[in-house]
Image (tube, rainbow, N blue to C red; front, side, top):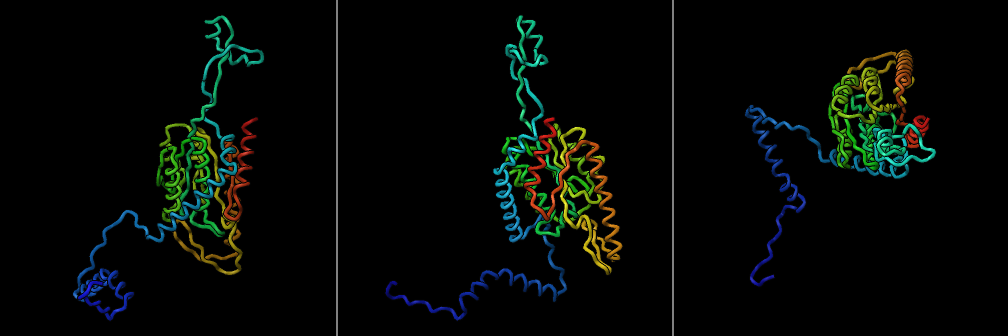
Length: 347
């Protein structure tokens, strides 16, 4: 310390309190101004509208969820999902590569008769598999997907499944697109080959506010209308009280459609209750007091009829259908589904 200067004495206010006052000075000033306005009868200032305001803690939790899903699904891809995916989902067909001289044992149907006539010797066409494949994920994000009676919500399971399929497609150099569906087309992401594209899809699924009705006929029809080429379409939904038959028929007629049903135990039956219970519709928000036993019985019967009609529709259209549940691990059943599809396509 230079000579001639005296150490300044500390202020009587403690340092933590002074820091709080310094950091919250603007907050205190706003509070005082608001008190003055209330005394004077003035209206509070209007807040500037924001397109999507996210609290810092919510944004941090969202980033952690997206990162956890990326790590988990990449690990599953490394464990063999990518190979199963490649063997099951082929490209658009076979692409002509070249002609070569005919050899004993070659299929006579592959003979190029124009080249054979021109050169005076038999030649056959050779083809290679065209791996230019587009994978499109149509994901239901309506209010019913925001429910889960187990450790994971149906929407979170849908996000994990979509990420797993998307990263497996990227590992095989395929394009990945997505659409978020309610009773309308909420978001359309055109097919691309980018990791950030997949991460945005996962973030949008998790971040979108829970709510909204379901109309897959309308929403999926809009999404498929924006696809300019044939694709492998994964329809991910819980298929709870929504019209979807027309959209599924249209998708199966033009694309390779795979139906992925997200199911929760409470989607099939209500918890037993001998007394009156309050039920709230997850999509409309309407609540009603019903008799526990009678409502549970009617609900179970209606859901059995809906699931029977759903299974009958997919069988009639020749569409692959797979169920993933929130109360069970999904990797082993998913790989078994891929293997069963591979065997069926190899026949």
